[in-house]
Every structure is written in structure tokens, then in C-alpha cells.
Image (cartoon, rainbow, N blue to C red):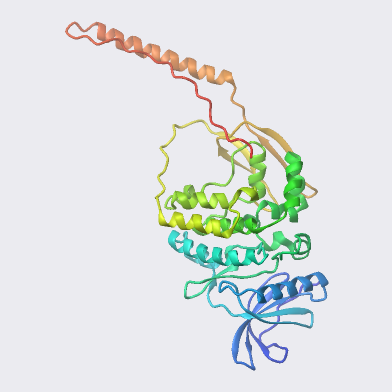
Length: 417
């Protein structure tokens, strides 16, 4: 399929819509700023390339009808849909302002918690309307959220949204869920439904669970995961670990690779951090089950902003080496330092992938015995020194020092989820 370029400025469509400039474009389409010469009004003109592709054309028509049916102020208003040449066009409200991805990059630091929670409240109110209408957006991320000069949030791009009577397969295979819905924001059920590569990788560990998740598909809780991941980045300025990388670690008996948000940003209240972690659980049935429930949790956290208090520093321990997947669509191997449960395994990826190895040194009982032996000898020497010094004193008396052998406590482990 030959690469298609955006239309140049000055192009007139339908005898009335004159393109002023391109607002952005990708492999499947472009968005323009245009003016309606008949009404003298400015609009955003969204084009999808390759109108001759029936699947793409049908998907775009669905998006037009879906947007036209929405009334919440957080969604752009659609006024016209048409096909011309090899493109399909959607005429919609031209929303001023920048998307949150650009604003975050320009800011260079996390947004204020109060500001982000206000945006989340607006979005969850909109998602409640959307989900009650049987629509799942499936592409919530900072670049699809626009902030108006009046502080209002607009949710854009319904290109891979799913209606109440539609399945996951058609849109995911024609538009490309993982190309559009960035991996770091997509829930596990959406990734596995769209990517046979990740299905094969994770099936090596638990094929039954993978099959069950694929059969489930996406639902409103999938949007709440994506929103949680979006809020995570806005509040920490760090991309969250993607769902397949987390699943690989957890299902292998290791700890979750997603750091708690308030560990990344200590100024974040613990209650907000906890709410985001609930929204981002891998199992969709254990997340918030409605936008209203997540909205209540975040409102409660905002009303009781208990500051995060760092835990006491733990004694220094010898670190062990863990080999993990780099959280990208085409994972590579990287080695980091981490305390982890013993595990050894090998996973083979589909053709074109890499071989992943997890090798972790196992601390044996003999190691603990040696450490305990040295501790006991040291305490005995200390006891003898103190006892002899006190025995030589004739004008005072102190009871002998009592030695205590420390008990051995099992290290806590994180069960596989």
C-alpha cells in the first residue's frame, strides 16, 4: 500500500471546507484546521486515508455515528461526514488548546495533584455517560486528551472505540490497537486480544489464564485501566510499566514491576496512589467496575489528602541480579538490581523475537547458617569482654550482660496473582 500524504493547505472539499493547515498526521490519516466558506466557521477536519479499504471505511463511519450520538461536553461535536477521492472525512468541533502529552513534555515535571484530579473527575463523568451508552473508548492516553483555555478536558479519537453490539476483533486487526493504543496505557485483555506474539509469550507460563483473558475482551474496566495509566504518567512524569511485562513477572512468581505512584512522586497522597493501583490491576474483574466507583474513590482521596510518609530505611542487604524484559513492544533484555524471589526459567518468543532468560541466584540455608554462626561468635566475645571489665571493679556491681541470639525470620514473599 503506497504511503499517502496529507492534503495541502488551500484544498477545498465538498465545495465549502477549505483546509488552512495540518494539525497532525499518521500512517492512517490526518487532522486539519479548516474553515467552512459558507458559514465562516472554523472546524477540525479529520481524514482517514485509503477509503477504498472497506474495513477502514466502515470503522470511520462508525466513529462518525458514535460521536454524533454523544452529548457530554467532554466529547467533540460532529457536524458532517463525507467521502471524497480516496479519503473519508469527519467535520467536528475545532477545540483550542494543546494535548496533555505536549503540555507534560513542555512542563518538565509532574502536574499538580489537585489539577490532575480535577481533570480525572471531568473524564470519569464523561466515561460514565459513554459506558452507559454501551461504548468503550479503548484509546485513552495523554495525547488524546486536550485541555482547553478554560481548563476543560476533551477526549478525542474514537477510531478504535467499541460499541455495545460489536466485538473486539474487527477494529483491532484493521486499525491496529497496539499501534494506536500505546502499549503502556493498554490493559492486558486488549493487548492479548490484539497481539498473538504476547499471547504466545505468556501462554508458556499460563496458557489457560491467557485463553480466559482473550475470551473476556474489553469492557468499561478496560477504559479505567487506561485512565489510571494516564493519570499515573501525569502525576509522576514516568510511563507506567506495560501490562505484558508486569504479567510476565507476576505469573513467574516475582513482584509486580509497576512501582507505586507515591514511590515515584513522594508528594502524591497515598490514597490517590492506592486508587490508581486498583484501576491498573491486571485482572479486569478486580479493578473499579464503573467510572462512578473510581470517581468516588478519587474524590475521597482528594478530600483527605494524607501526605505520603516514606517508610523507615531498611538495613542494607546484598542485592541480587534479576534479568527482566524491557517494557516495550519489541522487548530487549536488560539487567537491573533488585531483591526478588528465587526463580529460574526460559521463555521463547515468536519468530523475530528474542530469547528471554530469568536467572536469579538462590540463597541456600548454608549461607544463613554461616551468617548466624559469625553473629553468635561476635556476641560471645562481646559478653566476655564486658563481663571481665565489670568483674575487676571492686566498688560497684552490675548484673552480667544477657546475650540474646536473634531469631531467624522468613523473608516475606509476594504470591503469584
